[in-house]
Amino acid sequence: MKLVAVFYVLVLVPLCNCRLISIPLRIANAGAPARLYPTPGTSTSSVTASSEVKRKGGQNLALDSQPLGTISFLEMVNNLKGDSGRGYYMELLIGTPPQKLNVLVDTGSSNFAVAGAPDPYVVGYFDSALSSTYQSLGLDVSVRYTQGSWSGELGKDIISISGGPNGSFTVNIATILESDNFFLPDINWQGILGLAYSALAKPSSSVEPFFDSIVREAKIENVFSMQMCGVGVALPPQEKDAVGGSLILGGIEPSLYTGPIWYTPVKEEWYYQVEILKLEVGQQNLNLDCREYNMDKAIVDSGTTLLRLPEKVFIAIVEAITRISPIAEFSSGFWTGSQLACWAKGETTLSLFPKLSIYLRGMNSSQSFRLTISSELYILYVAEVRDSLDCYRFGIAPSSNGLIIGATFMEGFYVIFDRAHARVGFAVSTCADASASHASEIAGPFSAADVASNCIATSSFSEPVFWIISYVLMSICGTALLILIVLLLLPEQCCRRNSNEVNDASSLIRHRWK
Image (cartoon, rainbow, N blue to C red; front, side, top):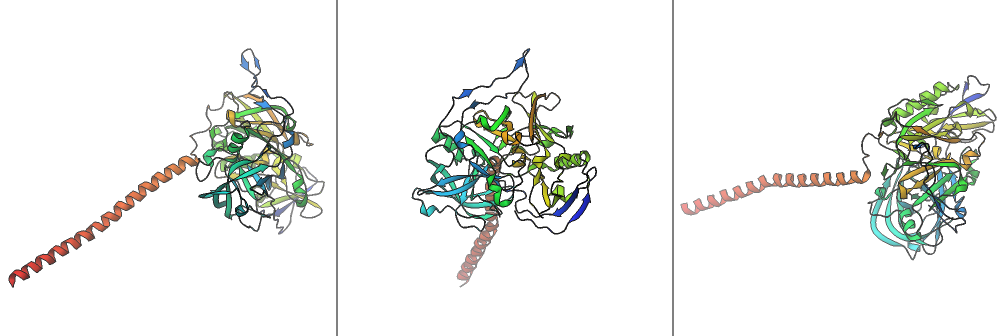
């Protein structure tokens, strides 16, 4: 990340003897390109399948808080590196002979793509010409994310996964030949591993995503889970890759979480779309219509750095934080992401910021559960601007395309993507639980009787549907244009015909006159 310190402004913080300094900020990947894989070794314990619901007097007292199944995947633990600011990535071996690349783990897209040509921000790329097993499919492919885009060529090749299932697997792979704001300074990954559903795959949903191929070929369970351990870590850039996490393909690793797992249904299988019922700041309800939280969509996306909220929700969150927190004199630039908040070393006052909570609908639709994170997760350590200062940025940002539970929020939890049962599970991560302030909490069940039966106002306008409609409209426009061209040409042909008839008649008259 590139920091530009332009000037310093001293601000006295109410109710605190510490000093807050506001510094203009420019971060190359402040929004992180929204658009990483995978799994198992030898099982060391037997599989248990349970969907137990505790009952009393015939009433559900808990949501479906038990895992689909548990199995030890210890060989996959710590197979991720990185942090929320630059993304979490894992190592893959691609082609024959194998070429080693790091790929960003992204649950918000569905294409597996790697740099296929030199780029100033990547240290290496996949040279398909050097792989004897690479097969070009002759298809162009391009993907545009919330920020950044790339285009390239679709092909197939074999891969093997460091810290994943044993063996080699044949998967679809896109080689990135051109990109815009996709690869960024100070990253250590050269590609992206899309883990969402095939509905988002480009150029069409017929392209089998990476994880689907692994499930089919390795015969593992259709579930993966993630633990991202950047929470509360303040390390200099050269040590950032010491931070990491785990991507478990094919199941759940019990050593990575504490307490029960709470599940919420996947509302639509494209992104991992969930339904949010309520948001709280410092245990105070924002009191917005629940449809505001699900405006456009609400998704769980590891490839997005921050917690992103629809504009109206973002404004309400900022107003609530500034109202509740004793720190009221922050520059507006801090909330919009253009400025850092810096304290003298040892004077950081993150405890003055309130906890944030998101309520998700449970598998029992009449109930909900609450995910809570402390300021340790959403007030993000950036860097030492001076030897005497620790600087932070706001880990929440406005969004124009829905609510995104990104890496900032996910770092507090062990997240299970149970595709076999169309649900996403959350448990307290052992990383977050080990932190001094217990950075995350889960509680429930709560009644959802006072919440609308459906907080998703209308069916999501998914990309596949959008493309179908686009093609139909283009066909209609093309047909209309063709008809217009024909109509424009007809008068000219008629005039030529009439002109020829006149000339023929004139010649006949002259002939007869003679």
